[in-house]
Image (cartoon, rainbow, N blue to C red):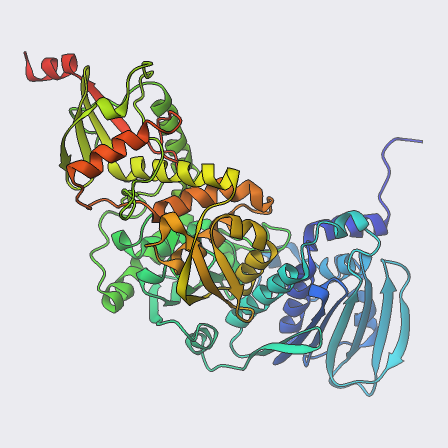
Length: 593
């Protein structure tokens, strides 16, 4: 026999399931999408134990006859497309015909359905992709699919599932995306027999967004450029968060994860939105189907545009016009697609050594389109009232007896740069980056020893979050407490903040918590401990003074002393250089002496 053989249908289905069915929320997504494609006006989702023991989706759509019900459980059987050319103009959620057989291969699935013109329905049971058990059944018009014991026959996959609260939160997020996609449909979610959410049918996208984000002041934006239409409901810039977890983007009614589009929306706010922060709200983008490819991701969570740069520019420019009127934003400035020109300081030379590595890190972050790794324009300044503890750095090797404290402070430039005189030349420190490094080092050291000291609030502050963000905090309560933050859930979409790190006592509790969750979410599945440094670096931002803050000579000298107490480094926790030096010899050459 040859070495190559064709896989059985069971194995092929389980391979497909590995791409399509990641967790219970993936099942909910696929089944709800099928319901919407079946012209449902009401979709009810029931889950038990976060969906691990049961996911049930019931709709009032057109239903199916016996033959179609049997066929829909076979691979690549679909009513959405017929020929290859149909892939270039997809107008439905589903189209591959993989979801149901994939789900059935890793669960105990029961399908009950009755077509609108049929006198009776049909019920089909499949256990782990085995032979179907088919029988007549009664019931209302529409379809109900029950998925029990997900991954019961693939224990290796089941052990990767998270806590019940986390899986439940992911289900809630999926249903929220579907509700934003189809405001004309009513959605109901129940957990363990208890109704927890209901999105009633709305007259428009804007009305649905206001219902979903009832506590936010949202500006309505509408614009068109050629064949592209943009509609958005966005919150003021002061409500922005680190990371795009609070921003929903939909393309042709399909919720997608697209970093480029999220950046385009953020850039529409111009200079008032700090690098790495994204607004709260919803953005719907509509383009002709032939100009967008939705067949680029196993779970259809990403898209590819025929003219990505044109879409980016249109979204940024058109949204800015409406946002400028609503929130009084300044002019947008350079074309968003043009590279940002950062002129070098003409009289200073960045030191060699660690800072060169830091610059490489910044360049890599920029090239990877990760602005959150290199915040611009919001230098962490020295901590509100206290000197934070960590390094700036000269980029030349530090001599044994050399110290920042030996530098003589000359003055502050533009409320941002600290000019100092050393034995060998002039040193310019970025006060924000230097102070951030000091705070980061202090937070990191105390966290490693006994946890960050906490300052309890006299009055707890309630912070609204998404259900998945609340679940992250609940699941990692002990680690969050070691970071000096005490939160308690208030329902499934808010927490009460009872304590914040003592070093950051003057920072806004809401921003600390939201940025903490954003950093953990951005860790993309790594254990919480793997994101601790990112979290501490972000928290250090809140405990440091910002660009534009005036510092007294005593404060600057205290910062220089603090810098000598931390490990030597040439960059802040986010990878930006802290100091530049120009030797006296270079200065003399430049002025012609």
